[in-house]
Image (cartoon, rainbow, N blue to C red):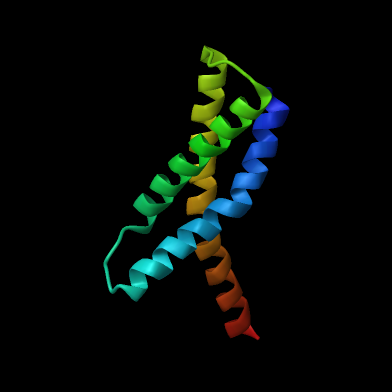
Length: 101
């Protein structure tokens, strides 16, 4: 795995992970459950980053190496940070812009 592939996978995950987090949160809201949004974002980010990395590695026939493990860990961390700063912050910003008009 190269740095270019890592950035490409991150871009894909940055679109998909906040949508999955919102789906989980909407489901929990529908069930009237309390939850920690950051913890949900962490769990979804870890699962989606590992799944995406393993899919890429198996489709390309790559072996597990220390460098690939480091890339996967980096992908998990940046995906989690991106998902926690995702949909909620954009929604809050749009609400603030609407209220100013």
